[in-house]
Structures are given as C-alpha cells and as structure tokens.
Length: 415
Image (cartoon, rainbow, N blue to C red; front, side, top):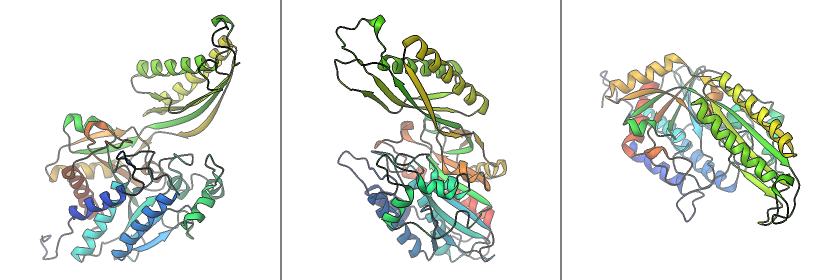
C-alpha cells in the first residue's frame, strides 16, 4: 500500500508478530500451560538471546546498559539526535500468561520491521526497548530496570539488590552475560510509548477495542512481621493467646474493609508465612506482604496511615509485636495529554472504539514518564485475566493495537 506519494506505507506484519509471541511463550513453559521466566535466570537469558537475534535481523543497532536493559535502535534521518522509544519487558511472574510485557516489546519490533520492509527511514530514530526486572518477582522493587535507566535509583544501589538466595542483580547480569557497557540514560528519548494487554476486565466487558491510558495508579508495598508466642492449640484458652496468625488474619479483614469503604483503594496480601507452621501449634510468627494501590496520591497516603494505625492497635490488643517495612512507594503518574489525544484520534481514524482509563498495574511507562513524554495503549484481556496461563487476547485485538501504535509512530516520526 502507498502513502499517497508513491512510497510504500509501513504496515504491521501480524503473522510475524504472532509467531514471535508464540516463540517467546515457549521459553520457561511448564506442563500446565504457563511459563516462568524470572528476570536474569537462564530462561530469561534464552529469551533475551532470541530478542537480540530478531533485532539484529532487522539491522538494528543493539545496545545493552549496565542493568541489562536492551535497546534496538533504528537510526532516523536526524542521525540519532532525537528518538522515540517503544518498550516494555520480557520477564514474567511465576506460571504466567504469554502476553504481559512481551507484546509491548514485540510490537515495537513489528513497528521497526514495518519501516524496514517499506524501505522507509524515519525522520527521527526509533528505539525498541526491553527493560530488566519489570515484574519484581526475583528482585525488588519492580520496574527496577526502567527506574535505574531514568536515574530514579543510584546505579550501585540497583546492582546491589539481592534476591532471596543472596545473589545480587550485578552478579546475575554477569552470570547470563547481559551486564552491558552503556551507562543509564545514555540516550534520552523525546517520547515513550508502551502497548500492553489491559490485565483487567473493562475493555473486554464494555466491548471497547483500544484503551487510551491516561496514567498509572500509585503503588505501596509493605512487608509486615508479627511476633507472638507459640503454644498448644488444644490447651491454650483463647483469651490467653498471643496469636500471630489471628493478628495477621485481622489485618487481612481490615484491608478488605478499607478497600470496600473507599471504592478506589485496592489492597492485597500476596504472600504469607506462619511459624512454626504446624497444625496444632499457635503461630509464633507471621510474615506477609501488603500491596496498596490508588490512583489518587492523597487517598494512597491515607490508606498507608490507616494501616499503620491498625497495626499499632492490633499489637496492643493481642499482645504481639508488629513491625512494618516499606518495600516500594511509587506515586500515581499522569501521562502526556497530547500523546493520549493522538492515540484516541488514530483509533477513531481506524474505526476502533476507545476509552480513557487509568492503569491498575505498574508499568515501565510510569518510570519513563520521569524522563520524557509518555503514554500507553491497552487492548482487551479476555475476562480481565492476567498473571495466569489463561491470559488471552485475540489476534484481531493484538493486530489492532500494533496498528494503532504504528500510526501514532508515523505521526510522531514522519518519514
């Protein structure tokens, strides 16, 4: 197809995009249909190697920074002085679906392919990025690679973060051969775009094809430790117990009530461990994590304060000791309005319904928004399922999202 000037118009090759998604989904696959590709593991290395191979096949200039962030650069007519970045991640949670993160990176690759196959040189450079440790399962905090890239955490501190086995990020990068030479921020894009499956039910429920993401809600992660006293489950009267398990359960109920009462705050206890862990012993210790989220910074702060007050109250009433360690705190992020408007216009021009929305999940885009204009595009997740092998988005919707992304890139970069 021509763009009206006689030159071929760049077009998305959906068949190659889908094949790339299926290929990455096989790395770290398990017998139950999921895949586990934790960051900087051998499975992650295999996925990185394939991504780099695909980038080189498109003759992109591949760069890797000190945090293992991978960048494939298609130089524009300006000689690389200015750039637009498309990115996401290829690490997964445990027993994950096939699209989360990977779709965003591979759609960026599909856009680069569209330029190459049309024989077009963009007016400005196009960068396809895959950021390290977006999920935060092995190393905390999540989005560590993009956070380090924008200077949100000192380089040495980021490389010194340890997993549960005591391995640092720096050691893990060296082990898989992705400790690159580029310094964080060696390139500073003017815009950052991220295409992602919604990971929620709104688009699918309302039968909307494109989500125009205006921002990301705030996130606050905590690790709470409760110390009580172990005793016999059958002989210790209820009023004489110092039950760490009961105290933990009380916190869980409190958090659900808090979320229901606000209508906007989300609260989750994602991990919990009891000691000594016997069916007939009152727990002496409970350690669990709390995930608080809200699109409004004031309400997120209020939720944190209410949790702290409840922990103090529970410690006194139950005769236990409670400590809370703040793991991660990211304020809500508002994306660039001009980019959001452009996404909405492009969707309409393609006859695709769209809606404005705020992301409930964290994304590398919220880190990149500290450095440049940023925005996100969502496509529907069937049933709102994500972080689960049943995660599914139709090929029609995957293609539509990539085509909208390409159209926005064409408007921003020109040729």
